[in-house]
Structure formats: C-alpha cells, structure tokens
Length: 68
Image (cartoon, rainbow, N blue to C red):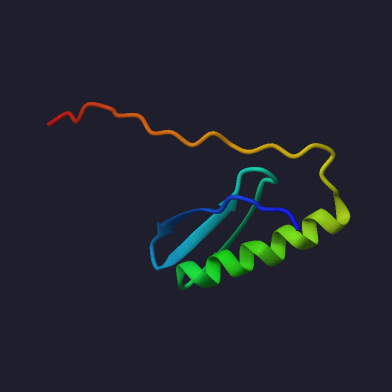
C-alpha cells in the first residue's frame, strides 16, 4: 500500500482534491467525497501508468503583503 497526499480547496459549491505526486484531481460535494473520488481516480490512473519513482512533496507556506 502506498500513501499519497490530497490537497483540497473549495471552488464555488464543490471541493476539489488534487494529488501532487501523481497529478490526478477530482471533486465532490464534501471533502470526504472529493478525497474518495481522488483515491479512485488515482488508483485507475496508476493501473494504466505505474509510478517509476515515488516522491513526497514538500509543503510550506508563504506570505504576500495585503494591499488596500
């Protein structure tokens, strides 16, 4: 079993989940649904295009000054 990252953000009324390791994305009406759909999409993608090398993304934050 492999562990992947899900990055989730909201767009209008839907949640969008993306997997940076593979490049897959999906959506759902809840965070849980979006992640389940992403898991399914990623599994299907990896059946067709197996990963040659696994990597873990580096997650960090940065700030941009607010302009009034």
